[in-house]
Image 1 (cartoon, rainbow, N blue to C red):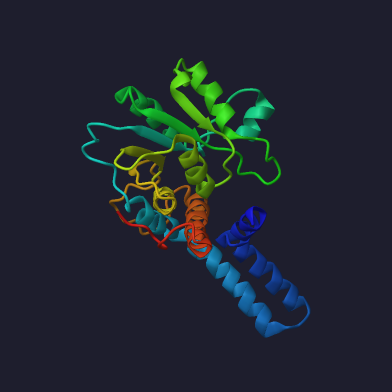
Image 2: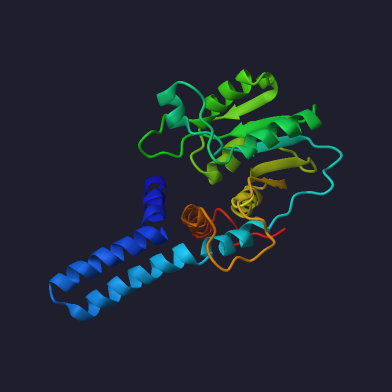
Length: 260
């Protein structure tokens, strides 16, 4: 199922769908199946134009990123801090012999900041390998190496390195730290990913306080045309909406779009 979820996610990307439809339509035109060929070609081209010119990704990302606002003010007391993986690239790190951060490095910055603000809180980083080809490439050892190089005290950080997805993040970390009712745990992950993460933790019986970081949209203005980087944002937001649907079908969340 893990491999299948990766394949379905790849096949459902708008740009892959547009490319497949365009190529299939062109092949059908060569075989003189004019009507279906024209429809597929036109449909693929239209999807490509929509996802490239219009800010579809920004609109859909804003819905997710605004779903759980950061806590203001922060809790006076925090029992623990859970930081989800996604902040480093373990495959590149192994190839280059040094920690390589990804676009979600804000999770690590928040981890260090919150750990200093709450010196008595437990701190957990949870992140294994999400790669089908490199299942041995876990994030946790890379993050440990990175934090050590920055002079951070990793002795107070628990590292969970077996999880392959957000569902396993929640379950494996819950079984590692055994959170008790009434405790206050901050959950740190990207704002785009926060609705799915909160839904998974709730379904696992763990109430958390969302601490979203790594914003990709401002949450205020509405663009008429797609901004720079829109194709990458379309891929990211499609992955997240697919994940919400998949997790709901698997029963890993109780609602399609969790709310505060």
